[in-house]
Amino acid sequence: MSEKVKFGRSPVFFETFNRRPGPIKKNMHYCPGCGHGILHKLIAEAVDHFGIQKNTKFISPVGCAVFAYYYFNFGNISVPHGRAPAVATGVARANPEDYVISYQGDGDLAAIGFNEFLQAANRGENITVFFVNNSNYGMTGGQMAPTTLPGQKTTTSPYGRNPLTEGYPTPVCEIVNALTAPVYIERVALTTPARVAAAKRAVYKGIQNLKERKGFSLIEVVSPCPVNLKMSAEQVNEFIEKQMMNYFPLGVIRDKTAETEGRPLPAPVVRESADVEKILLTEKRSDSVAADFRNTSSMFDKELRVKIGGFGGQGILSLGVMLANMGMLRNFNVSWMPSYGPEQRGGSACCSVIVSRKMIPSPILESGIDLMIATTQTALEKYLPGLKEDGILIYDSSAVKLPELPAAMRTYGVDAIEIAATKLGSSKCANSVLMGVLAAVLAANGLNEADQADFDRAFAEAVEEKFGKKPGAVEMNVKAYEAGKAASLK
Ligand SMILES: Cc1ncc(C[n+]2csc(CCOP(=O)(O)OP(=O)(O)O)c2C)c(N)n1
Ligand code: SF4
Image (cartoon, rainbow, N blue to C red; front, side, top):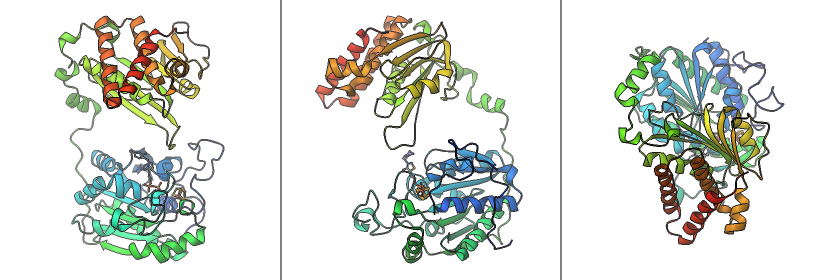
């Protein structure tokens, strides 16, 4: 391997970053001076060098590297915060022909996902972990991370990290070195060309270990985040050299690669999806709701698939929870799956609810939606293509302009915020108004009296649970629900 850093683009990157939204298709989204881009380049070169692009699977974290799949032309799975080593374990075990990389920031690996990470290391999974230590939570605007230095100011340690209350920087590599299984542990930095060359050696070794199935490798990359540290590129390098390295000394911490035999995992017993189904969906469980719950409204003859979309703070997610609770009261199988944008607040919010007599194989709801509630134009446009032609659409008439819709679609417009603000004196309970509207719409579309009563009960229980200590809020939300039920719908 040449130690020179190569210029030009690795063939393991896409030629054009077409997955990246917006007009910029040639550059990465990272801030100027960020270490993620340099590390991506080294990983791409190493994967190319060892000829494993075809079977490489990259598990990307929640953090600034969440969009790694814009760039790398190999398999990519984006996972929830901190779950990369757990998912990497599953992928590596189920697909012994794959080469699995887990890529994580310090918030992702050393905070929310530390246990998963340590357990994967302790099991010696056949994965290589790249750990980007930039001493803060980058994506969310620079909060304190487990790796933040004593005295370092962040948005959540404005007076500097105080070890007496916040503890000391977490020495991830040294902790992993206390375990028996890991094969290779090295900490590198990116501050000078010589350091990048050393980082390149470490990255190549990590990828080679992957190829040779040597087990668990960890490469920690002490990395610049000039934007959140509010430093120039030079200052951040000085901060890394003079301060971070006191807590995170560079070098090889363990290297057992020479004496470690490659140990490919045996092929898993169950590989075909039909076999998986046999195990998960046995005949007995596939129709698992008690027979006496069959006498419910006809709308439950099939699954009821509901999508609710709007923006954060509108109570979108709790609306879905109430609906799922109503299903549970009738002993149905239910799933509730929230999703929201990466923005700190005010971003998009959405949830999918499925109520079914049968097992629900997946909570993901992209098509075949029976009922949709949209409180913003963006949500309407995003989810409308998945709504059935004869589906039910409830929308906030002050925020949503309806396009031309199929004739069979049943639409109900209501200005929930206006009702909440004028009749009840607070727009905060607009989601309870919407819940009332939903109850009325379901009743108008065949929800029988017993189910309606359960719906009311689910609402009352949800409100009690949320606001039980504030009788005023309980009363206001109950009134909002009643107002929603009585609202005239457009
Ligand atoms: C379960 C969950 N909790 C919190 C968040 C918010 N969140 C998004 S990224 C992030 C921290 C990322 O920091 P780090 O892992 O250090 O990566 P960086 O962005 O610095 O590369 C947090 C807390 C989330 N998305 N999901
Ligand atoms: S916030 Fe920091 S870690 Fe995130 S892209 Fe910018 S420089 Fe990189």
